[in-house]
Length: 203
Image: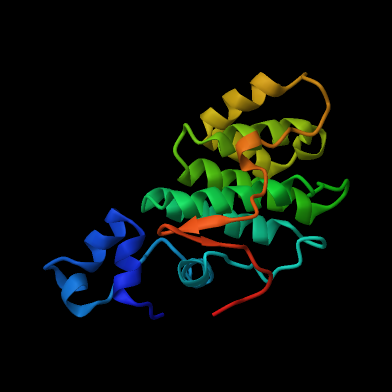
């Protein structure tokens, strides 16, 4: 995958260090993002050039793949200190998860939510508000999750998630509210310039 060197370096100091250095990646101009998949990097490059990105999944039918991509972008943005991208990806995540529903007897919904929670707790810092929200969301859907082997394994592997989950069990059976700062914005900012989000792919 190709991207203009100056653009990549301008996005954050961390990425600039990967681009401009005396080591092999700086000299050859090839950066290996070993923890990121091709789809996520494609979305990142689209955002870098346009100030926006578009997932091609069908969230109304199966929201979990695109929700996972939003979280992948959050993790990437947190890792390389790109706050504008993280804010946009979190906003997209919260907007979409607010419309998602774990349907009874739907193994794909249950599996999708469990994978989402596991990925978030494995990759986001413990202070990230997305983690607290996902624990609240799991507590809201606990009747559909309890008894699932993968959910029990998640609890055993993630004590922080279990702690947050227990703090929300027995509370009001209402959908968790989206943090106010993550309500969708009409305009995002990239490198000091304003871009109005558009639908579809724009290269």
